[in-house]
Image (cartoon, rainbow, N blue to C red; front, side):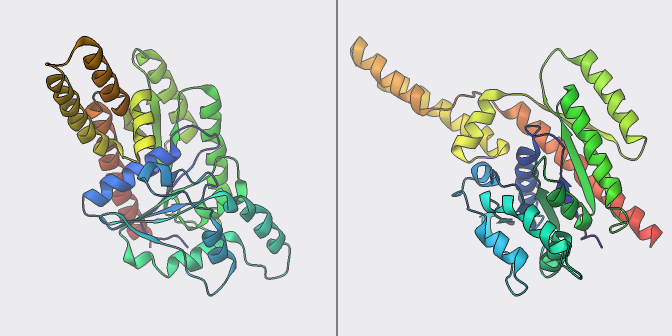
Length: 313
């Protein structure tokens, strides 16, 4: 049984943008008025870094999953309309623990635990997003067993494209338990300039893998190292970083004005200090537009999936 408007960001390879997409889509959906929950099922727990709160051990989430009477640990109002169930290192033990339980007669699987815990709170949210680890089959398949859709981010290298195929295999493996699960689509992540021909060929390869079951989203997320570094070290989402860039430019101009009457050495020291405290990126507006465009595309796709399921049922 799937949970309505619950989307898993999943890939068979790490470093392809799952966490970044989860965080930024959540923040933008929440800003647009959707009551949103992020469930971090990755032991790295980097959702905390993206959203600017203290990293978690994951112990409370593990306790909730393995104890019948323990609710999910929800960190509320991380942003307006945005709550988070933090992940962390302890989640790395989930696969072994639930694998052992599954061998017993009537043992509770991780999918059972997720369905029970999320089922109790799902009506409080209009959108639930899962960040999943790249290589943990049990956690990923448990997540797909309760999600209504899976979105697959990928870079354009062959290893990342192979990761898309692995998630497609896991998608098929859970359909008996969750026949309502749908592929939302594939999104190209960290695209550099001057790759038009490569992007065209990658899109064609992905469409062949998907076999018409889902789109390759029109939006692709550009690559900007400086913005990625600024966002994570400041705990800002990309649309928030866009405003921070404006404020950073104002501070640098003010520092420049304030040094007019100083001697050369003092002026250099003041300007160096202002630069060191500032952002690496100077303009994140294009990247912010990418995330906004993808969020719109994904929400439209989810509405299409809901309409499709209603006609089936």
